[in-house]
Amino acid sequence: MTVTMTETPIQKLFAKWKQEQAHAKDPAISDADCEAATARAVAIEKDILRTPSITAADLAAKLVAYSDYGAFAVSDQTTPELWAEARHLLGETS
Image 1: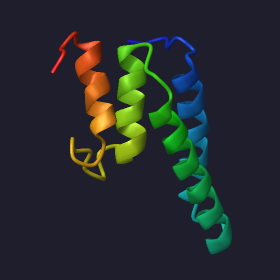
Image 2: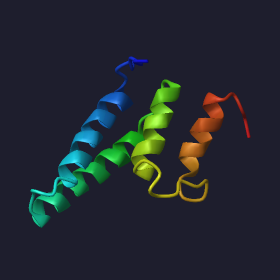
Image 3: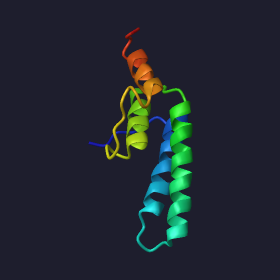
Image 4: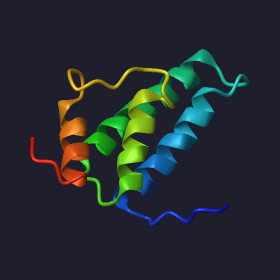
């Protein structure tokens, strides 16, 4: 099944993040290029977190980018704004 994503601001940023992640993980690049790509990916992650989610897919993109596909924990203590946004999208007030 193919899912078509709405091109929201977060989805555009997420596509850029995926490109930087792929570049950073390319074994053919130098350490300096890897560090630069990683720094760009981290900057994009911060932009993604600051951008309000429009869709549930946006929130999923935030979780994936910030956790690097689950490699890092995303807790309410480290990213309360993310979980507040999740609660808001679910219609929860507290």
